[in-house]
Amino acid sequence: MKALKIDVVNKTITEIELEHTKEIYSIIGNGCHTFCAPVEFDNQDTLFADDEALLQPELQGCFMLPDWKYPIVGNAVILGTDYDGDVCDAKSNIEELLETIMFGNKEVAEIHRDSALSQPMVISFDNWE
Picture 1 (cartoon, rainbow, N blue to C red):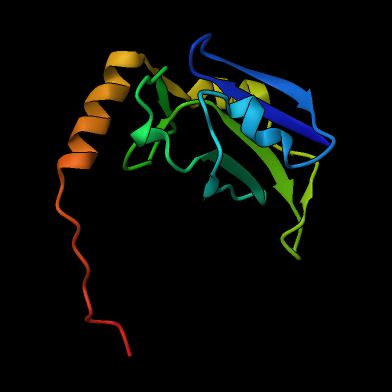
Picture 2: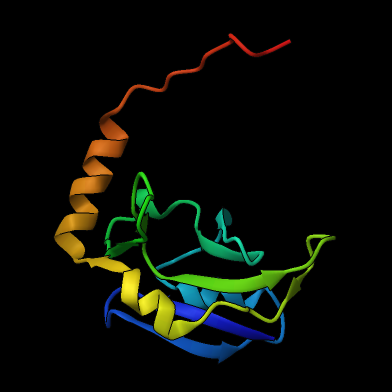
């Protein structure tokens, strides 16, 4: 499958080939053993990131796209998804992503981690049944 790797250390986005989604762990790196899919693009591509990145002792950097509320810490992988939720070739364009992506260095990632982990958890039951 055609995928895109967002590399926060080298501040690059490159096309890669994946045989299986299990490869996402090693591509993200930095001890990733649980990934999440926090972002779905309009073209049905999905961003996969380290679900526990903020808990890692050593942060490498982060990135954001316009209109996001917070950065994604660590490397990430973009894959396409179909209507059944299965992964397929990524459709996103590297050049278009590079025009809008903002990379943050290790210090920016640490500032975000410190801020995020110091916030109290708030759960609202207003809309629960």
